[in-house]
Every structure is written in structure tokens, then in C-alpha cells.
View 1 (cartoon, rainbow, N blue to C red):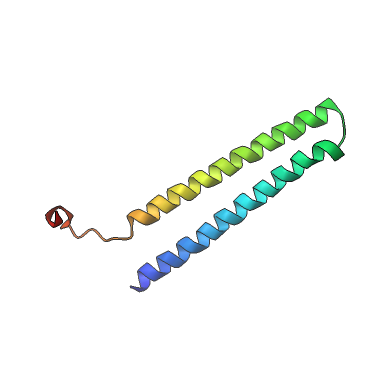
View 2: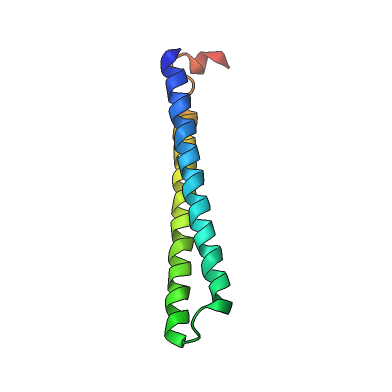
Length: 89
């Protein structure tokens, strides 16, 4: 019972960390998008800005994928396998 509770607590903490990381990345993307109007006007600066936006986008996708994988791993460990699943029909 305590092990299950500890696992749930740990999963909740990890989910909050994932959400915090994703929100930080999204805020950085928003700032970069808004800098189009206020930042330098050189083509090189805009190219670097676009590369950074795409890199942050890829990090957000990776964070979401890691969250889904940790959710599915946590979901598969909720019910202990007692070997009787086939008999329950």
C-alpha cells in the first residue's frame, strides 16, 4: 500500500516537472515570436531566431512524448499481475 502511494506521489511530481518544463519552453517560443517586431531587422538575426523557435518546438515535442511514455509506464504498473488475468474472463 505504501509503495503504491509512494509511486503515485513520484508520478505526480514528475508530471508537474514535465508540465513546468513545457510551459517554460512555450513561454520562450512566445517571446521569440514577439521579438520579430521588436528585435533587429537583419536577415541573419531572423534566421537564427527561426532556428531557435524550431529547436524549442522540437524540445516541446520531446517533452510531451516523454510525458506520454511515463504515463503509459505508470499505467501499466498499477495492477499487479497475479497470473490469474486469463481466468477472469
